[in-house]
Length: 315
Length: 227
Image 1 (cartoon, rainbow over the protein chains, first blue to last red):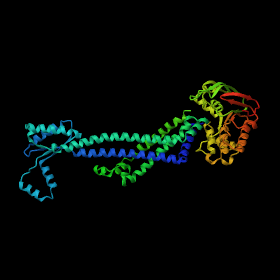
Image 2 (image 1 turned 90 degrees about the vertical axis):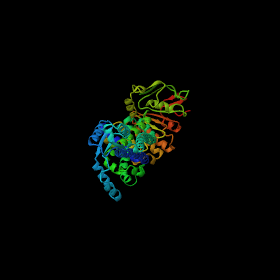
Image 3 (image 1 turned 135 degrees about the vertical axis):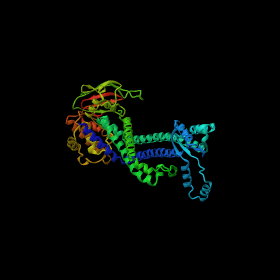
Image 4 (image 1 turned 90 degrees about the horizontal axis):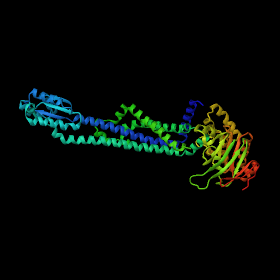
């Protein structure tokens, strides 16, 4: 018998078995659908977390304000020394004129303040440097460095008016802690949920095949080879995975658009996360979702069936 | 053709052997009825022939080959060459009659054309041509047993093992099944039948082996049921 004939027969029996054992197939598909949604939840939550952290991290900085009489050389000297620090990722310079223009723009509806400014005659604002660190935990050391410069009051340090880090210190510290914990929790949650889903799916398929254990015995008795017995069950397992993942890929469109809470994505978190939109993320990364969901579905279905049939094949 | 050479089987949980030191030979084309009370060791003896039970001592030969020493592949070939039917039919419940019989042909590596030709033919032999697309749960006990017989003989095996095939059937169906078995035997297939139905054994009128507590107590060439 040609291999092709065997494969054709195995595929046909797998498909026929999937359809005829409708109720068993339905429950296996539903279980795998739930598992897939958990997977989606994890993927989107992680993406939202990463994107939010990115946003927040970008908003955090340390600003050094210079005295109004600071010379250009002194500012440049500080800037050079900061660039030499390994923690610093970028520095942007705001000149006195720029600071004044920004101030005016910010208070354009506040006539009183603008009048006071005009009466002053001179520009009361100093130049500043906005410094970004590579990681939020590194701001502390940058701020300490600047503080030391200011305290020494020698050379360029004398030109520093104030370092605003200590005003933001609590907020930055807390953010660092939140980011750290949520990353750790995210990994723990991912591992735990994935493990649960795996066990549930494995067990569902094992139960489905348990109902067919007598048939497996009969097939052994008639002289069917192991692969001929196992094959159709694995085909059915692959179908469970395929059908459920396609179902999930389709359902995700309306769910993410209207009711992300249905798959455990809380809209308030989404608000908190600001710019992140799960529907946009899904449509932009559809291929990723397609590959991950169908891939895990097919692999899990086939593997579970393989393991479940193995128990009854040892005649 | 079949030879049990001093076979003994002791199951893990039992202290007394299910089969004790049995030596028995069967020639090609014979129809052997094995009778005895429940627990006499009839089924254990038959199962040793296709290696579903491995003897604790002794050896079973099929032709010139020792069953216990066959490789996995050879064992599959042997099983395809032994038809088996049981009291509880053991059909594949999710497959219809055609597919149940076709399955035995498929595992033997037959082509789809052969299968399409052979299945109706064998169903005609057992008188079930009109039920070819039915599922097992749509059939009566007698009909299911006929499907099981059709599946067992469709590969034209050298030996047909029938383990209490009429145990669940009424007298009329029993009579029909025995008739089919005799017809198959007339076509040259060796048959090993276990039963405790007296009328079945008496109506066949061929060799009768009587077992009691794992031992053969009688072996008559043209015997009757006597316990």
